[in-house]
Image (cartoon, rainbow, N blue to C red; front, side, top):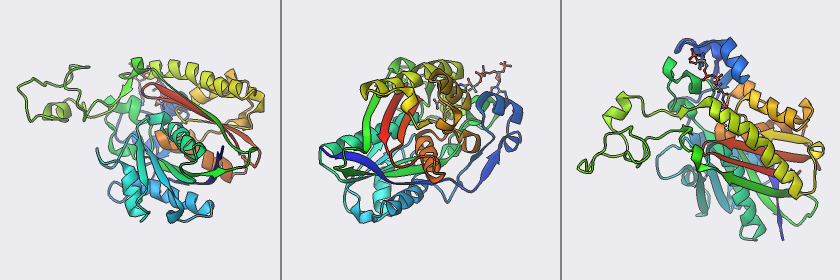
Length: 347
Ligand code: ACO
């Protein structure tokens, strides 16, 4: 059975750097508060007109494809993970296919928020193992800056998130020594509303009494003026509940991956945790008794870029020579849903 290797990796972040101090122009916050609670010093924001989730994803994809020694025409399938798509529908995958002038290949969008990239890798891995595809482009990209509440009311969320993209080409190999060893996917929908953006959506008022929909309101759909007036077009999060669940599920899903492969935490050469919050990564590191040089963190510079955070961190770690052939790399994610996931890769 073929295995999947990461044949090429790329990243793209917008040029515009937005510091914690810059945020204080819009909301009541401070550099000290943000750094103390999250570790974040700055993030990047996309150009509001020229850059989209898809265009950033394409920039990362071009680098990944080139580093794989391929061209766009060699790609057999596209998987795009994001929670901030260019359009409500269709997804970003088809926009990549069009803009990169690819063949009429399949394009799949994944909506698993912070776990989106690991879910995407897992799906791609199954297609490769089954022999269906040889080269799959997997992109994680977010343009959060378009959908955040920059008033003081939204500060607990808006200070955390940043924009950017990462991409990999997963490629089939017969080399039994390398590649993705296993992936592990989980969810618990009881936490669905703990970190969510309800609108635009078709929930009516079934789950929450946020919108005034009645059965005689034909024609009212997705978004009403009242929703906008009441700031119901922004994400909502119970940060402490997310924190508690994250520090339980990150170690659990990493240990699951290690156990199934007969390995121990000390075998990990590089842990790439989803960049949710530096405090979460540090607690996970402590729980697994890993030295700092074996856990990659760049949330300080980019904030939390959701589906893009793992491929951006993986790309930087690789570019800095911290991942080499033979390295055991563990990807681990937790986020909205709740969903959580891990992947163990022999580089
Ligand atoms: N600046 C200044 N003060 C703030 C800010 C801000 N940006 N945000 C909230 N506050 C205030 C609150 O209003 C509150 O004030 P009060 O005590 O006067 O009411 C006080 O700070 C404490 O608020 P909490 O929300 O309780 O702050 P907490 O200590 O929980 O920190 C945080 C918030 C950073 C979000 C934390 O809960 C956390 O990191 N949770 C994990 C969630 C996470 O990482 N989410 C990332 C996305 S999900 C993912 O990727 C997994």
